[in-house]
Image (cartoon, rainbow, N blue to C red):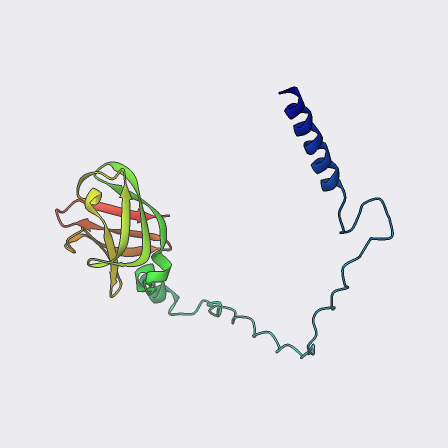
Amino acid sequence: MTQMIRMGFGLAAVLALAGCQSAGPSFGGGSNVRSPAPLRAAPTGQVYSNQLPPPPPPPAAPVTPAPVTPTADASAAAQTPAPTQTASAAPVTREGLVGAWRVSSGGGNCQIFMALTQWTGGYRAASRGCPGQVADVSAWDVSGSQVVLKDSGGSTVATLNNTGGTRYEGTTSGGQSVSLYR
């Protein structure tokens, strides 16, 4: 039995020594060291350069009205109110509505996120913590100059108009006021 153990140790030692010798590159800096072939430089094709086009012209400056000088008709002009342009005249675009919005309705505040993913009744919307009918909002769309919030069946929950910048005011289908703003 001891002789078999000795033979086993001897065989293991021979195998260990055989594994230490290799025909490949060595780390000792011997003459067997082979280095890899050099790589070709890149790019190998032609490189071109062109002049960039000129930048677009800057947007036109808003036209300011000429100053009014007092005349005999100044009292008549003072009585006539100047026409005002409301923000609701600005076009409402789907791209301008994408993203997170705050909502006030029924004395509570919540959030609605609107995406351009097609959904029942328009595009996907998700409400978070909304009270009343606004909690049912799962879709939205633009109808002319109005933002229409819809439920999962495509029924209108609220209709809102732009009241200035990024603020929309309207009512739910139940008659409750609702504001959408950033």
